[in-house]
Amino acid sequence: MNKQRRDAILAAEPDHPRWDGEPMMGGWYTEAEVEAIVKAVRDSMDWTVGFGFFCQEIVDFEEAFAAYCGTKYALSITSAGAGLDMAMMTLDLQPGDEVIAPAINFWAGHYAIIGAGAKLVLCEVDPLTLNADPADVERRITPRTRAILVTHMNGLSADMDALQEVANRHPHPRYGPPKVIGDAARACGGEYKGAKIGKHGWMTIFSFHTMKAMTTLGEGGMITTDDPALYERLRAIRMWGDARDDLWGGNYKMTKIQAAVGLVQLARLEEMNGLRYQRARQRSALLQDVPQLTLPYEPPGYKHTYYLYTCLVPPEWAGEKRDRLIGLLQDEYHVGAQVLNRPTYQSRAFVRQHTLGQQLPLSEELGARLFCPSLHPLMSEEDNEYVAAAMDAAVERVAAEG
Ligand SMILES: Cc1ncc(COP(=O)(O)O)c(C=O)c1O
Image (cartoon, rainbow, N blue to C red; front, side, top):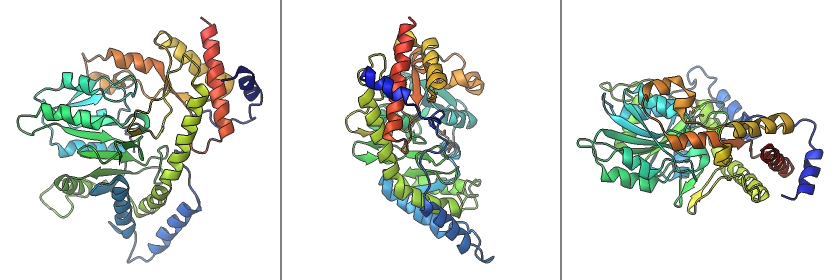
């Protein structure tokens, strides 16, 4: 980045920078969402109608989401956290069963595995993608492994074919190849080998929490699959056994209003993700000559959503200097940057207690090197230039501090 231009951009810093924290909404709403909400309420005002159980909005939203992902089925639910619990329930895990999941992660999947009574087996990630490393998964797989639960980290798909091949090479003696399951809470709209995330794997779980790429009024989620038996089981779990009275189930249903908003958000997702993608590429172009930064990687055949713009500092900056860089960005330049995520056993005592003896040195190092400066589809090109200039200047200062 040209230093003169950089310093001019920084000198002209806006009075009220709006990118000093993690954006509280991943996308944004328009009048179309407001109209959909009002219509859904108006349509429900008759006391003989109400919100219903599976109203047309829910059916339409699920059909549209399945069509978007190219899957046979999509099942709307209350959140990705609920979806991950449901995913583990479908495995009927027994004590001693193991589920492999990457250590660098949000903890929802890990909680679901532990909560279902299985052993959480942590694996390393590929340093380029921050996604589960299939070779390391293969090292940790045993005859007790029932599933491989991978997160499509920060918007980039895991290598689903390689993971499936590992699973196929190590079938469980009773249940066959471990199930490969995707956590796409942060990756709605991403692509892998010409298909949308959600198409590969036994099932994929999405989040529509307020901070995610698309949202259904703060909470919500979806599970996609091509497996009819799994779909029926998930339906049963979602509502008291659904049509079957001999099956266990709970209540994980989305509401009519959420589905009505979800339909609108889904129709706008490509636009919102497209803008985010442009900003990420603009930022990478601006920062390409900052040697200390490893910028997010998009492998050929993949489409990153850049839900988070994940950078790495050099290994010798791990920990203290990375934290100093984040501090400078925040305090001097008012640019927010988050550590998403460290290995969960470092951030959550609950995971630590259930993974005693497991240590993932590479994940620990990467967790001490990564940081995610704010990015949002509504960030203007000028604001994004400002963020890049701030990153360049903060890196230079940390480097000068020796
Ligand atoms: C990777 C990942 N999985 C799961 C979740 C949980 O999503 P939800 O808030 O919809 O339960 C999150 C939320 O931040 C996440 O980032």
